[in-house]
Image (cartoon, rainbow, N blue to C red):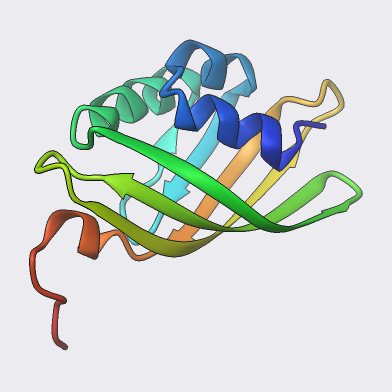
Length: 123
């Protein structure tokens, strides 16, 4: 089963091919409140687009739990915005794998608005 450290290392390197290699063909990926991406090709394409919106990112893994076919990882994610400013936000990622240890469902619970907006959004 892919560990949080190995998954986050690929994301932090913005390695879309490496990320794609972890995914089952019919995988589903949902981040925040965005529409989910369905299928390996769509997930890889959307990740590639996302990586053009930031200079970089890095995960600080805080905790990881693996239960049966599911991994839950808590992290602080630091994004380097296009203006060069770093913004750190908390996140929880949950993924499940199939019998081949390929990720079938990947969900990220995060508020990325500080990455893209100067001022916090008010409700």
